[in-house]
Length: 258
Length: 295
Image (cartoon, rainbow over all chains, first blue to last red):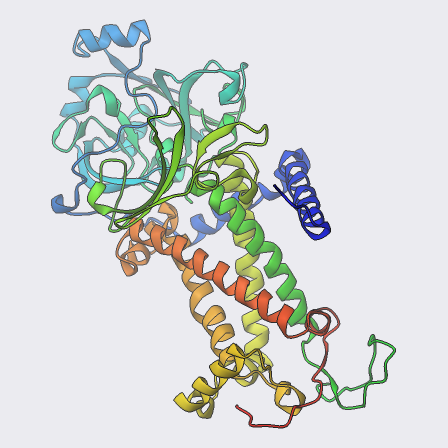
């Protein structure tokens, strides 16, 4: 039998008040918009102190025995399935938007370009991390080759995987197609590469075949997999829900340096 | 200043002049309460963030398949009777924590599989995106508030004179004596209570100069942007990012331990007088009981 004392009732009542107060606070659009200002402080501060800095690179001995594949691991989109069946022979990576000379690169073209190989740590927003080796052409020279226009402010990665636009994931207005965007500082960062290989082998489907981005100074969700098109834009407000990425449209920070 | 003794805001009972003194200056008090707010939100939102991957590892990395590196996890296990048990593992020790950790009740009364329960987290439902935003907002406020406190504390010599342990207090005999008196719940009163004794100084100095800076440093170690800015120095200092994440969790545990003891001592030593000193600044040192004293 439970004996309810006056004190325990007051305790439960105060706890309930605290919890419902917390719910009101976390549900308040104004309060959330206010605390979200901290993202600008983090972005500004990290851009201020981190000029041209490289993410730490590791040795082959540090590589995770099993690199966790997260997010989409087997996209079911028909066009993508066909590319997989064809060994990506007819796949093309488009680089367009605010560029003077749009590019269309085959996987063989990507492999022929001078590549950078780096062993880096992948930090997932969830808290786990894994170390892997990535190879591919740096994004900066590709953008230069395409003649990036001065009006371009952001680089958007359009992906082949539909991660779902369900309400549970933040709204039916979105197509559910994965996309991401970065600023030009990250786009021209030497470690920002269009990776076609992982741990010395071509990328597997689970890890984003035929190519995925490596944005080494930010969290994992910025490292878009199954990249089909790289678009230079002056604003990402017109894309999907306007926050600059699939997870950004679902409440996550656009600047994922922390 | 420190000798101010007019009994403002005291109960009607006459208190002899000189017993009440101005213990905490306004900056200390404001910083203290901002800190309470920050730590509260940081812990509650931090537990929500932890729930996204309720496991801890040692080393440079750690994920689902790195069993040998994983030393702590909160999970669930199906039982033969069709129910599930919450299991918390620390090293080789498996604890059944059904109802609180691993398996707990959501707001609608349904049992759910989740690391920490909703009533301990902010927001009170599992929401990594919102928890992160609130965590980083209060992390900024916590750091700025802490820096203001440190600058002010050093400039006014509050930290050097009132908080930093004095050499003569550090004798084993004095520390042992203070521990015994605390165990007997005999708190120093009278003139002796005008200064922090050694256990207070060790607890406060340890928290201000070691524990909380470690919490900030291990937290920043998890930021890929900050890591790159410092060339990998920061997680390296703690044995890698997965280790830094573990230590961030441990410093949180130690902070909770500090808060529990701190609040218990406030209640045992006279909550009205103690709380008033952190609100108005004024503290009644009371009357010393005859007997031996410690530093």
